[in-house]
Length: 449
Image (cartoon, rainbow, N blue to C red; front, top):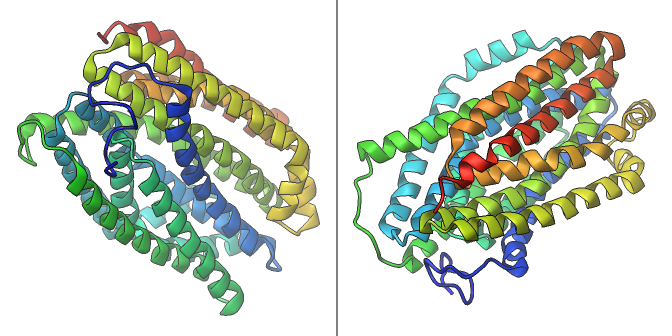
């Protein structure tokens, strides 16, 4: 089978029902690839968590939060590529499949270079908005100004991975992400413990690893293009109508994602205002949420691809059947997340830091990450459904409403309950997202078939 070819026994445009095996054939590698991303963040935290000062953890927490904000904001380059690519594949238009990659890479390179050029104003604005201790800010700024040079590579890799997911090619993205993170972890250990470079070493490791991962991604793109079938009339790279559709989709996703990453950014900023110890504890606990989100995103990506093909074929029955299967398995994985965190949460915290005061503070609020997978699973899964149907305006509007709810709960609960109020606001945001998207689902389903 070619790197971009159909699943075994499946023809392009086929209306054969999706099976449990096909769901896991896609979701399994994507989950492994996704989980390698927060694992890297956990390693970064663990590396500095075993140094002798709390502010090193806080610096990486703030620096990583800034990049999570930027990376998630531009995750539209993946999310906005997978669904349209899957639709083009379902319709048998492989000329448009090729052009989707070219347009995505064009946008990725432009955005990445712009962010590098604007690094000074971005850093000034970010650290003006975050109230952290002088030591935390000093090291976080150093981390940011080094790692920002990885942005062009990161965004181009996002475009490549989103395109490959749209072709049901999940193995190459898995290899790319595992390779990138293996290089990063290795360099973390060498630069921090071998050369004593501290926070700067963690940032340099990320830059080198991201460009190495992009080089491997380009290699897989060449292999995939060679195996891609011919079909469809070629459209120009700068086709006005197709570019406009891509920009509209990505614009909706950017606004939607801006709300989502703002939740995390505000969470960390408010944690910093509570003090270095609550900030360090919340950074450790937030990794539980990140692991959950990247794991469940594997099923969201699967839904986006499988259901996107059904949309391209105008197959309403296949759309409904695929949605039920993906939701079933996502619910099972959410329950497993809750079980693992219940049984091993304190042990995981101990792996993240050797500081007794941080361990104790994190253990006090562990029950929030234990329960949140059951609340958040619906938001993740409906994201995949709406992206498959490219109904991004509904996604944008519902997230804005949920974000307003988050701010309201934060305003009321933080003064009364402190750190618990922060976590209650996050849970409210995730729950509202899933509920609102569920209410709009009949409108989306009527547009297919």
